[in-house]
Length: 280
Image (cartoon, rainbow, N blue to C red):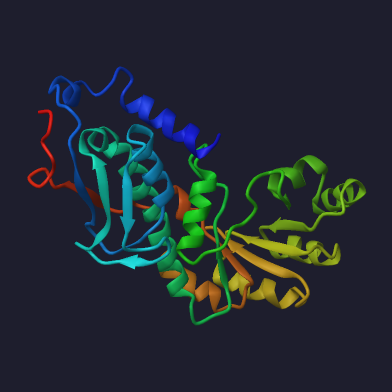
């Protein structure tokens, strides 16, 4: 699904038979300006879907951005100015804000995690725990927040998880069977020290330390040679992430970045007084 497909679907969801309130006012086009205002400190993401949502209804809309994606804005700052037919902008308002608020929320939460581990070499990764069809946008938002993308989809990389290990009859068997059919890099999920030892013996490329305590992760890292990368995952809260990073893992993956980020609070303020009332 393309971005334009998503926007058309969102507008259809919001206006299945048009905007009953706005259209019942029977107003002619009204040219003017609107301002996008941050109502909290946030990291900007989602400018493309915001723009396109407005442009679908008003192809002549013009937007002047005062911040770039990835930049941080303060509460009450003007993020951009919209110039166009305010009647059409009003119809697209909620859809455009939903995109930008959700994606800026992801970027803002990612920034908080990145800042907590800034004194280490750890990279913060996202996961596949995304709203269906939103993954590409969500992963871009993670990058805007200073994070990095894990695999984009199941076709992108090999990650042997617990169910794969079970169905294959064990970790070593899973690795061996995959190597018979692929030369791709292999990452293996390990939930205890025995699985860590087994993964090390199989000389995998990366070991995911899944839902381990700090103590267990510390012991696991003693078993893993430096040529094998490590990823910590599970229960990675803001309060805990720094202590995990300080253990010396390569990556920390955080599902919350995309499945639990609170939306950034933004508003579109219309300058009706200064707009052109011709045709009303």
